Image (tube, rainbow, N blue to C red; front, side, top):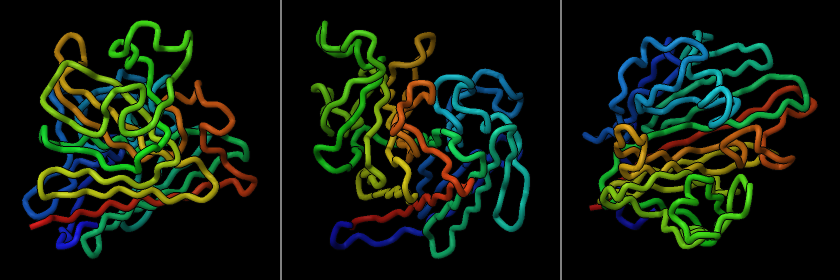
Length: 279
């Protein structure tokens, strides 16, 4: 934390009936979550195409792939006690308890499934950031670019049929990822490996996201869309997404690229989000 920065108490809101989606994350006059232009989020039914409404979507058991953005964003979650929601699927059950006492948002998750069950989870947080914003992560962090980034690299750079290309943060393969400047028509995703804590810095404001989970791969996924997606009506959206796993698509995940349910039949993890402001 920067010397002189003061804590900004955060509050959040969610919509249990529509995938448990986080609809607000705000403090001291600033709303951190971006709201998208796509209508129809409330009319979504299971197996519908993803609707990019913004906020923070719970993506499980995959982010990309089938079903797109996972199984739980398009289904209602149900109350299981104070501040606690649960959703049951044929192969897993997940619960989430969120508190914002003391101005720090803490989300505790617990997934139950058969031992050996693999999954990827991401807190798909789309943030409302200015062109001056940047993402602070440890320099040198191994970072996987995903195939849509190939269009922005010199010809022949991308390995044939590779699901990703790995380089060092903040500029894997020469692509600068840590700044979010003016719209330039680019859009691509990346995953920062073994990176459970990052800070988003935007002017005087800092948002810190930290993921805790024992014995599972922890990453931070990045969706850097500066007016490059979708092709038929591009807009700006920036996703900073704490993740269990190391691949967007569970189908691409190797033995160390997905979270795996241990013999006890449960995986528990915690997401902590805090904010600070400098003078």
